[in-house]
Amino acid sequence: MANKKNKVKFNICNVHYAPITVAEEGTVSFGTPVPMPGAVSISMDPTGEPESFYADGIEYYVINNNQGYDGDLELAMIPESFRTDILKEEQDANKVLVENANSETGSFALLFEFDGDIRKIRHVLYNCSASRPTIESKTNEEDKEVQTETLTIKARPMADGYVKAKTGDSTTETVYNNWYKSVYLPAASTAEQQSAKSTKSVS
Image 1: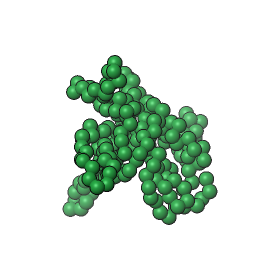
Image 2: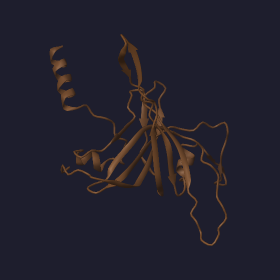
Image 3: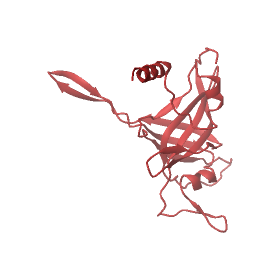
Image 4: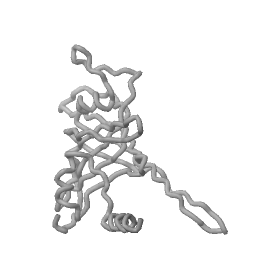
């Protein structure tokens, strides 16, 4: 990509979710991202503050305590696919969605983007869970008012520590254009690759 930098960001759009599957041996895999149209807003606050360890009368060490993010995703309506794939509502023989207290909700990656003055900024939160949405609406008055639905989301670190990723000013065209085809996983930096090759050649 050209090295032009965004100065501002605005708007949320292109929200997707990708179901997570965990194999018996613990291997995590992501499904193909599924669109969630009708995004209104997202607000995710960091959780887990650094903790200080004191010794010799000083702040001797700062303990990293990144526990991910908590927040809300507001949509015009939650898609049925998300209700069945993630919230585990069951569709009966009459195509009615049924909520069962014995069902456990699933985990997913959440993908979305913000508009920028130069290009869109694309994000992924790797390990998310969502609570059941509130049931609410109200009567029409003089004007009709759209009633939105909100998912409360917890994004937690994966076993390897990764929490989220987002595109930057120099992200390659291939990665940027394929963002919603599959969940992006971090690649080793050039320095790390060279170090790995060097270590391999020495051994």
